[in-house]
Amino acid sequence: MRRTVFLLFFLTCGVRAVSAQPAIEMRGAFGASNYLHADLDYTAPTLLVAARLGAGAFAIEPEFASSWHEETQTFGPNVTTVSNDRFQSLAVNLIGRTAGRVAGYAGAGVGMYWERSQYRVNDPFAGYEQSRRRGPRPGAQAIAGVDVTVAPRVKAFAQFRYEMRSFEDPGGGSVMQGFAGVSIVLR
Image (tube, rainbow, N blue to C red; front, side, top):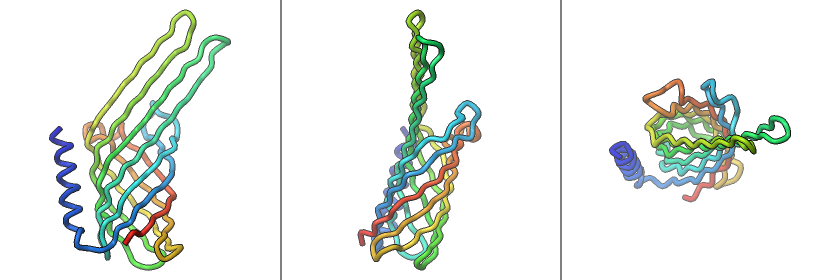
């Protein structure tokens, strides 16, 4: 609970620090997450939604991300296994950026990360189901990308990021992600 309150306090202070600056962007992207621990050997589709607040060289970027994976395996005529995994995060990044039609940016932030996994064996003689939830857990991330202005209020962007989804288990909760998206400049 204290960690969630800290994150909300950090977000509120960051928004107040840039509230006098005029630029507000809404950003949305689709990409992929590649998990860096041995028990998850897949790449999952990922959705990212963020607001970038600030002007000039620095900005604050609160964001929400969600990735998911479902897999079904069949063994013989009557047995199947189904696994569902969903990962979600709520984070705040501090961004440093360059100016121009093609502008690079990099930054880092802190966040809260949740995971939900379900595994089910469909067998007429011995069915089995297991659910597991982890989080919220505090973690950190580093990001880098490029914005390309395509119209006066529209930018396309590509972003690469590394997430450490748990300070308690830095290697076990690490993820590499790549995104492509669109940013709409509101003001």
